[in-house]
Image (cartoon, rainbow, N blue to C red; front, side, top):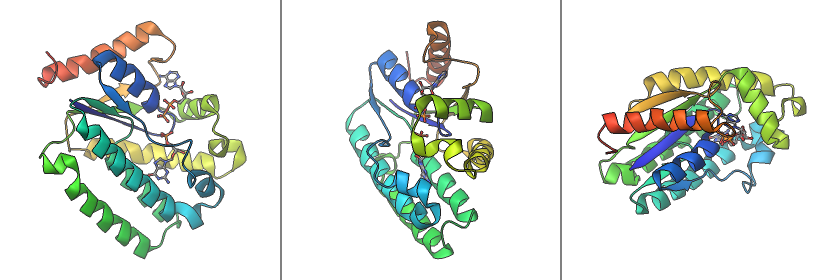
Length: 215
Ligand SMILES: Nc1ncnc2c1ncn2[C@@H]1O[C@H](COP(=O)(O)OP(=O)(O)O)[C@@H](O)[C@H]1O
Ligand SMILES: Nc1nc2c(ncn2[C@H]2C[C@H](O)[C@@H](COP(=O)(O)O)O2)c(=O)[nH]1
């Protein structure tokens, strides 16, 4: 069983990956963030580093999917399908050239063909999307405390985060690689509230059962 999580920055993907993998007895595969050397550079100078960051993430994501596919059951804390959303948004903000976009799009398309999903003709069993409001997003970004993501570090970040959230709405609606479901990330505190955690797990189990992935 392969479950992929999606959602904006601070939506709760890593937290849910831990909760869900413990619940299902599977392994969680996390996005590499704290040891990503390009991410702080990107937040300091997005125009200079947007393309490099994107290639860095794509490479790491590919590596992580290959590792995950060696296991029969796994949970991935962000889908490869979201990478393009980030890059195209940055490109539309003038942080990447049309040539960089073309190179990236072609590389991504090539890599997608090589993915174990493609080789096994197998998409994820379920995409679980964590839907959050802007206020929740900011609250969680502050709670987690990565310095370069804090809105007070950079007056352009609030607009960046608003744009990201609105792109995610269209992205989720268009996503059709696998079955999908949305969780209201504002409503359920699956980190600190055991009842909420159980409700979220029940919602996911129900979707897995309906689709015959869980007995
Ligand atoms: N549903 C939730 N309710 C309350 N706090 C949450 C929830 N999801 C995540 N958090 C908190 O928000 C911060 C960001 O969560 P994280 O899982 O790292 O998000 P993501 O991986 O999507 O960026 C963390 O401090 C985490 O404890
Ligand atoms: N420009 C891009 N930034 C990205 C991409 N994937 C993740 N990120 C950034 C956003 C956050 O600051 C950080 C980690 O994301 P979380 O949602 O896990 O908190 O990395 C990307 O493809 N392009």
